[in-house]
Amino acid sequence: MGAEMTQASTDANGSGGNGSSTAVPEKLTDLVELLGLMPDRSDRIQMLIDIARRFQDVPPEVARRPFSEDHLVPGCESEAYLWAVRQPDDTLKLHFAVENPQGISAKAMAVILDETLSGQPLEQVARVPQDVVYDVFGRELSMGKSMGLMGMVAMVVTTAKKALAASAGL
Amino acid sequence: MTDIQERGYSQSDVLVSTDWVAQHLDDPSVRIVESNEDPLLYPSGHIPGAVEVDWTRDLNDPIRRDYLDRDGFQKLMRDKGIGQDTTVVFYGDKNNWWATYAFWIFQLFGHSRAKVMDGGRLKWEQEGRDMTDAVPTYGPTGYQAPERDDGVIRAYRDRVMKHVDSGGPLVDVRSPGEYSGELLHMPDYPNEGALRGGHIPGAANIPWGRAINPDDGTFKTADELRQIYEGEAGLSNGDDVIAYCRIGERSSHTWFVLTYLLGYDNVRNYDGSWTEWGNLVGAPIER
Image (tube, rainbow over the protein chains, first blue to last red):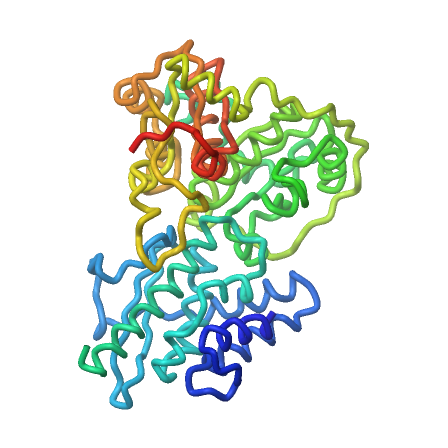
């Protein structure tokens, strides 16, 4: 499944090379490949649960409750919020809040997005396909759940695109 | 009298409290079933002794868009250690949204010994009750399932079309954004799985979650529910009602409320819902 995601991203880029500056961040493809190697669904789920347990709420120096609706991820019923803090090297540090205490998949997705996309080149972050959600969680997701998780990816990608445009003075 | 019995429901015994479940954890005549939207929840921890019924793997046909058939349901019940006389108690995430979906499908096969734990997983967790990640196994039963009966509580699109033509009451239980069609037009975000947005003509919009007290996931009282469904949506007991959402899961929650808590006799869940109607060539749509 990791190969599928990498192929999709390189096709979109037109370069076809995994080492391209605009390929999807390597940390993400590595994680997807690792999940794809899980021998069965229960192993994948256990790995995602372990990832979710690393979730850390947005620090107070970045945002405090009540959060602005501007940071709410559209379509995510777990009430996920995203903040992206610009770093000196022109990358983004991602922070999330997940207000639904049972939103364990949203927490797992937040950790994955932070750990694999924070600090990565904006061009690469902007290329992450929404359907990476299926590479991570598998196809057995409800439409609502997949929409919410894809919404988290989409908001990160949109934020990276805006940051790129700002850098270019657009 | 328990709190549930004081709320004025038509069939109050369809709900059980978290206390009741805690007292029946080792009752061999009871099988506790967790059904969630989030596939990570049950493996991360659940009520001791509870089995999982997963909506995609366990309740749906793997190929066609339909539910499992008689043989599939019979195998499911046998594998989960559920007998004909077993009382199944459903609970789950999202204020029992998926629990009532599983409950509804069980009723397609006539397993009437079924209850829902009021407050669902949220209330159990809030009360700090025991959870475990140990997955229990139960010996197979000899469950004999009847053929699935889609005629009483399930609506197919042709029935819905006639219902619209005759001005019958419909309840669209999706969010206001979905009802208006607005969500289909949000740029850069996943769509609703339909080519057109809006709602079935004549449908009232009562989002499913309004039946719930958000603080603890319990159902509102019968008076409060009547105010919503009768006072606002204009339904009345005796109506032939069709409820729908996007794929029939949220509307199974409203079906449960109208049927068991308010005592409506003729409520059907249109599980084709908006992913069918919004893609159907020539189907009338309101915005």
